[in-house]
Structure formats: C-alpha cells, structure tokens
Length: 453
Image (cartoon, rainbow, N blue to C red; front, side, top):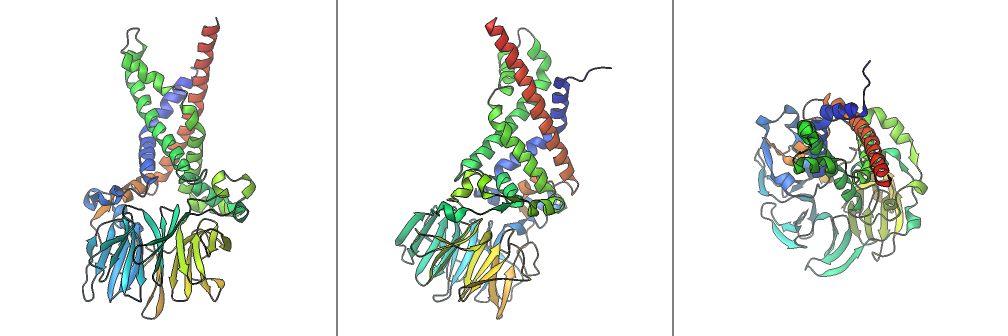
C-alpha cells in the first residue's frame, strides 16, 4: 500500500481549495473596508449576475423618511427621492450616506455622509455644510447644535454656524466596561476585524492575514505548475525565489489569525444551527481581548438632548454632560439612536430594541430586529428595516460591487448550498496550515543540522 505523504496531502488540499480560498480572501479584504466609496459607486448589471442579487442593494439602505410629502431613502449608494404623486425614485445625490436627520424647527434635512455633513431644504439639492472629507457615521440634532461621530472614533459638537464647540476621543473608564458578552457577539467581532485591539489594529491583522493567504494561494499554485523546472539544478532564480517566499517564516504570524477567521467563518455561515450554543455561551470580561477594556473606536450611534450627550456602542448606552465623564445608562449593543420629540428610540444589534421616555428605558416589543430608522408617518410610529418591509423602495437593475462581494463571501452568489463548499475549503485550509507548518518545521530542522555539522 502506497504511503500518503504530507507533501501529497498538502498539494491536493491546496489544489482542491485554492479557487474558493482566493474568493474568500479577496472579498474578505474588500469587506473589511466598508467605508471605501468605490465599493458602492461601481455597479454591475443584474442581467449578467445570478438572480440572488436582484434586490441585494436593499441591504445598503440606512434611512427612510417622509419629508414635505416626499419619500427620501438614504443609502450607501446615495440619496433617492420619490416626489408626491410620482411612482419612481430619482437619485439627486450619489455620495455614501449613513443617516438622515430632520431639523423640524427650520425644516431642513441633514445627511451624514462619507464626505462630511450635507443639508437640503427640499431633499433634491444637497449642499456640503460641515466637516468636509470626514467620514460621519452618525449625527444628532438639538436646538442649534449638531453632534457628529467621525468614523466611530471621535465626537464633535458644533453649532449650525459651523463653530466647533468640542472635539474629543471618548475615554470610558475601564470599570464601566466590565461587561460579559455572548460568544455570538465575540465570534462576530473577531471575524469582522474589531475583536482584538482598538482602532485599526484588529483590521490590520485581518488584512495582513487575508493578503498573506492570497499570496500563499498564488505562489502555491505557481509551484505546482512549475515544480519540475524548480527541481532542476539550473532552475530559473525567479522560480526558486517563489518557492522560498512560499515557505517563508512570516506565515507563522498569520497562522493563529487564519485559524480564528476560518473557525468564526464556519460559525457565521451556519448561524441558525449554532445560534443556541453561541447565544447561551457567555464569555467573561476577564478573558476578553484589550479592545473590550477601552472601546475607543466603537461609537455606533449618538444622541443630543437637553440632559446631555449619549453614545451607543457594543456594550450599551453611555451618557455624559461634558463629553469627558461617562456613565453606563442602559445595557445592550446599541446600533441606532434616534430621537423623536421627547422619545429616544434605540435599535439593538443582538439585543432588545428599547425606548427612553420620562427617564426610563422600556423594551420596544414587536419591532424589527436591528431596524435602520424610525419615523412618525400619519401620526403612527413606523420602523424601517430593509430586510423586511412593505414600503416603496428604489428599484435598480444593477448591483454594487459591495453587494457582489458580500454575496460571494457568504456563498449566496452561487447557490444556498455553496456555503458547504466554503466549509470544505475552510477545513482544507486547516489541513494546509497543519501540513505546511510540519513541513516547514522539518525543513528548518534539516537546515539547522547542516549548519552545525
């Protein structure tokens, strides 16, 4: 019986999985950087794409509101407007838009975008007004004041004349961050590049890991194609360099992050199956990575009112009167904060939706999970969730590059069963990592013995 060598296992695992691993790696790098505008400006006609992408741009919608009897939809594609008595949407604004807020006193709309804050008096003509070139992920209005979050990192308080009143990085005391989290939350944070360290460090680790995997896939394939030439005594130096780079010791730095990405990826691919286990398993704060001790770049939403400033992060809602001293006011990942008159509406991510009224938080029952927006329309509270909605939305015969990359990454681009192909590729990647590490170690051991002899 012929012995199966590590080299053969390594080779065939790579050949079987290389294409899928390349797709997952390339799309992963792009999805790590959701702020990049070109992901939403590049569009591909749906007629050349699978049917599964027909309505994929719905996921990009961030706000839905009625303004002067017109319907406005803010999306990462831009802003769409459907005027009264018309049946179609126009797109007067093409910059990535994260939220809309209505200044009722002056009847002006404010848009938080990837290029500052824009205003409009009719919803059709938009003018850049504040914080040009800044990525504004959330805004809140009160009186003649504006509160903005810049790329989840900084808070800026300014007046409507553009004067900056205060600008700070949020520093929440560590004793207010001693919260346990579910394994479901931890798995998502790790996979999305926000689960280890503050700022861009976690994202950089993910980028380095996925770029290194792309490099390994390409060099490994080249080695397979040219292996006979590489073995020749007078082989081309470039080919031998490819071999040396493929077995470079740098891969050790990517080893643990790669294992984390493939394990968390499998969990996320089968969220429904693993949900009870992930939801019921609690990770103690004592064992959480450094990012959970600071959360300096984790401002998901903001609120401004007469009683102070609020921010929403993955632990909950924190309140301050001076932007320096903070207190935990309500627990639960806070995705969206939106104030309508005296009520503050809270959209949760993996947590309950809540309403703050008369200084008390109450759970908002029978509301869409992780809704994007809430408005009063015809004297009724209307919650907007792009996933499940009956309201009129912009129709498009094209899909953005982001939507395509997302469907490729989660396996829905090809078919619902493609997720299992991703699983197989992930398992084979684990085999590649184990066999590759063993072969690298053996080679280093042989080279070491040669040197000492």
